[in-house]
Length: 98
Image (tube, rainbow, N blue to C red; front, side):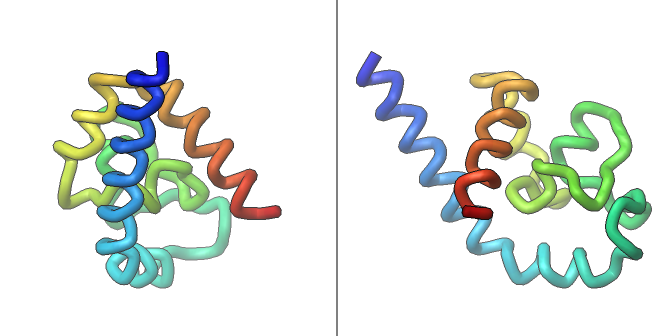
């Protein structure tokens, strides 16, 4: 179990590093969008592209999975599944808001 946890932590750190690198791009993308709650009609994030769904502005995947690097989400989705990734990101968002 600890080996699985180490792997999870390692993947999480890698995702965070990659998210930090693309943070400037993401901030620019957010400013191009309309008011909160509107749909992202410019470019959906990699997760929404792969899952073939609409990408809302408050999409939990958007800050972490750039639309220009869909293979990153595909890899994470293959290991954890979209539902589990979403849950992990929501927990992370809750910790950041406190």
